[in-house]
Length: 224
Image (cartoon, rainbow, N blue to C red; front, side, top):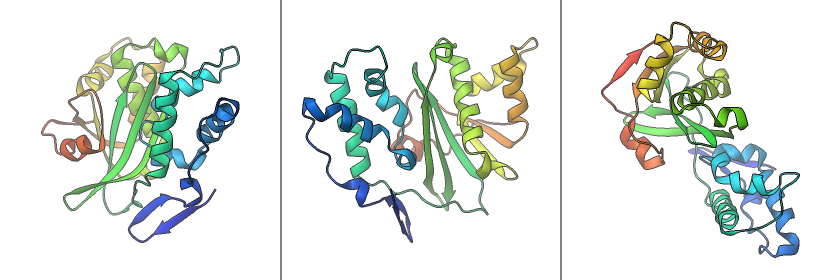
């Protein structure tokens, strides 16, 4: 796998953009494995883990291999995302970083970006599936886990610089106000204290690129 570095940003390589084979049943499992083995290219696809969930479930050890409509939609969405070549930007180390976090029942995700002038630019997409224990977390704890995931994933970008995190403000208030917190919540609090953070309230249940552009200027802020 290779990538093409462009002056204005980064796109998936031409090799990764070649059309995939038709999803014939005798080759579909191989094609799914190739698609999920995107490696570096996950950073170009927002909500990769959430989109891929039906395909990952299909490939579990004891699962029956039934390529249903949900699997077909997930396959086509990932294939389309890889071939549409979204542009991401290299970081500007003189500017603060901004993170958008999101959580669902089965996955968490984050977008690392910056504002250059008035325009927000994406640097990195990251996401992962929740395990069985994490899937049973409360909605508030999942929101917090998304923030923790983002800070750990992007640590090498964020340490020593100012960071703005857009998340569910109520979830962060809940975390900071707990007097008898669970051990994992205490670990999360200690992690947050490693960074120079400002929390800004994010309204809405789903993050998309148009929403990010609109939501990167909320009025409610809370320094930690």
